[in-house]
Image 1 (spheres, rainbow, N blue to C red):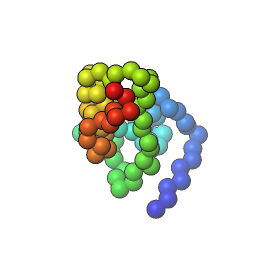
Image 2 (cartoon, one colour; image 1 turned 180 degrees about the vertical axis):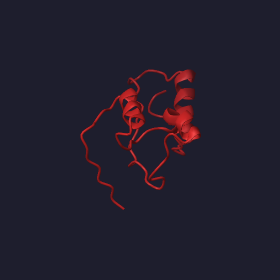
Image 3 (cartoon, helix red, strand yellow; image 1 turned 90 degrees about the vertical axis):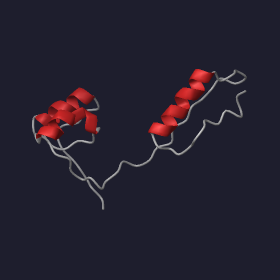
Image 4 (cartoon, rainbow, N blue to C red; image 1 turned 90 degrees about the horizontal axis):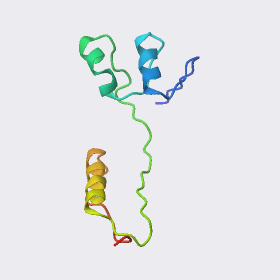
Length: 96
């Protein structure tokens, strides 16, 4: 199913998206946490629940020849887990 949206309001700022939705200017692609109180109260509702944004590649780049410290490795593993990449441990084979 294709969804084509056009309109007069366009913004990339979270505050602008939130203000536009709360002013009844239309629908938005937004995180649930951005509208959590309004979703709970019924002031706004979720639509197009079966639609998903296209996947994007996410890369972590390390300076050549430098050790990847434990904090960086732990952070990247955390991101992989919460973003559900299923990547498991971060591959640092090319970076000692």
